[in-house]
Structure formats: structure tokens, C-alpha cells
Length: 356
Image 1 (tube, rainbow, N blue to C red):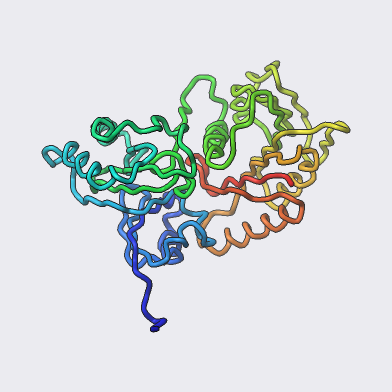
Image 2 (cartoon, rainbow, N blue to C red; image 1 turned 90 degrees about the vertical axis):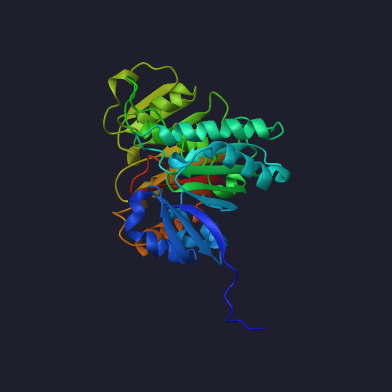
């Protein structure tokens, strides 16, 4: 046997957020990419002999979403007659016998103000659903995270499709993004969109918390996340040395402590279902407070922690910080079960722990 023969390469689609574009080539190298073509704003079509590295390597945290490319059609749909019908018939031929639980179509440039490809994606999905036998799943949040879905992405570069479970893709939507309207008049801050997307993402890994769950929120000011949790009928004990937005005053289910997180001590016997930390400052100090207060979590309690890293200029420094935070949490009995870079994250990652 010749060990020098490289493994057979497979086409794969990975999404590396644009904020990490400066280190994208290093990330792709760690994924074993033998070739790479950029698609849209932050997607890359690669060929790799080690597709498992996309999900399991240390660099996996930089990829928001991934998909095996079972079908690629490089073309300009806008200039092609009959694109929707040709694409729909091809998808039926290629994937009909594989019985996907659902079919979802998105765009390679989901934030583009140009509505053409959003309309094209919607029309393509509509035609495909007419051709396929009735599927068990109609909406993204109905999906079984472990069952295979047919995901498709379309843009000026063409059509790119594959089947994989939402959990393996690291997202329920094609492309992995759930966009939140931040222009509503009652929006307090961008942070509300982060926790809304985080709770959606959690459906990949565990059932949602029932109404009335009690959250301990560290560093809550100005209250964007607080407001989102209250809107979902959760109870919140919020801590910050700066006041919350006045619009939250008197909201049912909210208790606010105007003090430094490090000085806060829960009343004896108090327990929480979940702990949320989006504090600024050194992440080592933030996780120390999470560890200290996680002793008040119920068994199996949830921790949602924003790991804020210095400006990302290489792969090694964020990885080193990640390993430090993870080792501190593990030593305290907090088990990491998921991690991602949310649409509304910047130089930060959202980590999900479970209390032992």
C-alpha cells in the first residue's frame, strides 16, 4: 500500500464569515482544501480529501455552515431561459430517490439589497415542491436536526446543492443564517438579534426552554437580550453596573440588580434554568464569573457565553484563547456541546455549555 497517495477529494461548500476573510486561506488549508473558489460574499466551493476537518478540526469554529456539494451548476441564472424548470427537473432526478425530509433554497448573497435572487430562490423551491412527493417538513424549525435535508443555494455564480442533516451543516437554513429585523421601533440593541438567533440555533441540539424559564443575565445593559428573553415569556434576573433602557422599567418577569457582576450574590437557595453572558472585557474574567455563578444552575442548566476575541488576524490566537476558556469551563463541570459564529457576531463566537 502506498501511503503517499492522497485521499480522493470531495466537493464541499463552506461559509466563512466575511469578517474572517483575511484568514480564510489559512482556514481552508486546515480543511484540506486542494482547490477553492469564492462564491458570493463568504461562501467557498472547495475540494478536500478530509471533509471531516470542516466539522472536526480546530478551525471548524470559523465556518458558520457547510454542505457536501452533491450537485453544482455553474451558470448565470439571470441570463438563462427556463432556469427554474431545468433546475427543478434536475433536482428531482438527482435527489428524488434520496427522500429528503424537506427542501430549502437560499441565496449566496443573503444580505444583498437586490431582490432578484431571493425571488428566484423562492420560485425555485415552489417548483421543486410541486415535483417532489409531499415532504414531511415544510418549515425550517420543523426539521429533525439529525435527518437529511436537501439544501440549495443560488446566485449569479449558479446553483449549488447537497443533502446533509441540519446539525452536520451547523444551521437549519440554507447558508446557516436567521436574519432578525433590527429596525423595529422597540429594538433596544443589536444584542437582541444575537440571542434570538442563538435560541433558534439551539434547536439543532436541544428542545427550547419552556415558558417561564429563569435566566441569569450577566452584563445586561442596555437590555437588548433582556428584552428578547422577556418577549419569549422567560423570566430574567439581569445584572449590570449601568442601568437598563428605560423601556424595560416595570416589565413583568424582570428583576434588575444595579451592581458589578463580580459583587452579585444570588439569594441562598435560588436556582436558574439558564445563564447568559455577553460581557465586554477580558474573556478570562467573564468566564470566571460564569463559573462562579453556574453553581446556581439546575442540573443540565444552559450557559450561553459570548467569547469575545481580539481582532482576528490569524488562526492561532483565537484558538489559544478558545482552548483556555474551554479548559476553565470543563474544570468547573461545564460541558461544551455547541459553538458557532452567529450572523450578528463580530470578532466573537457564541459557545453553549451544559451544567453537569
